[in-house]
Image (cartoon, rainbow, N blue to C red; front, side, top):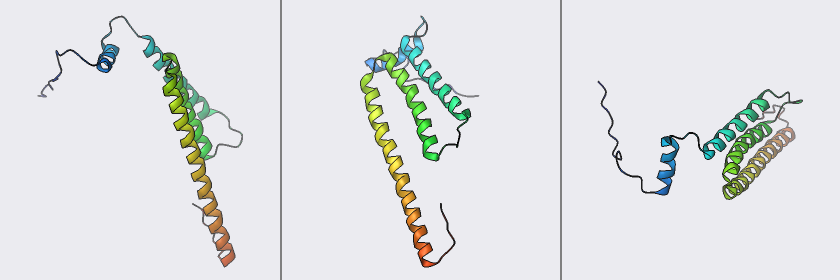
Amino acid sequence: MGSKCANPYAGEALTTPLLSELSSVYHRKDGIRPMDLGLIAGIAVSALVILVMHWFPWPDGLSRVGAYALGVAAILLGFAVWQLSDGNWRALAGLAAISACDGLCVVVAYRIDHTVVRIRAAEKAEAGDDTLTER
């Protein structure tokens, strides 16, 4: 009933190193390679940290920014474990720089939003409007 999809690359040798490397992940007969173990370790660490943080008894709860930051940090930790197992310091340094910049942008955006809400509330109070709406 269903037709088979023909693979246009079947039987051809992979010529680029990247394709050969990716192909070797799925076609090795001698078991799991060390790179795969690093990836598995990164996944396990990230998942474990997310689960622990989910059920951790936070004393006052977490703010949205705090929960977001911890979730992203857990994902980055998993990536760091994987990259460190390969000795890929350059990718790890780049990811750290990008993440730090993006995290700072999130904090600045939330501070701007908070400041705008306070200014609008002050303007409403000054105008005599006692209905305070915050988003």
